[in-house]
Amino acid sequence: MQQVPAEAHQATPYPVPLDNQPGCRSISDDDLCAWYSHLCYRPGEVSLCQLVREEGDWPACFDVDGYAQSCLQLHLILTTPSLLNC
Image (cartoon, rainbow, N blue to C red):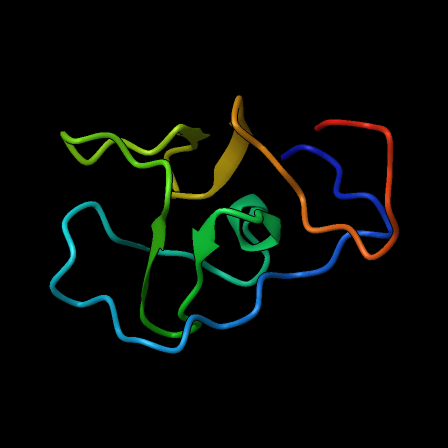
């Protein structure tokens, strides 16, 4: 998994259940996607990447256990402004 910088923080839980949305998947709190600014994060439920493609494919590369290992569209949620685009 890509290293998450110390100034990054996890996504805020999304207020609406996403059970009937296509392309949803379970995202663990230690998954790379949980730190992603485009994630509709529902801990303990299914979550949705806002950049999911029509066919339901996420932009992340997942390992055999279902954890995101990298993402070309990664935009971490940073607590301090940064000039670095992830």
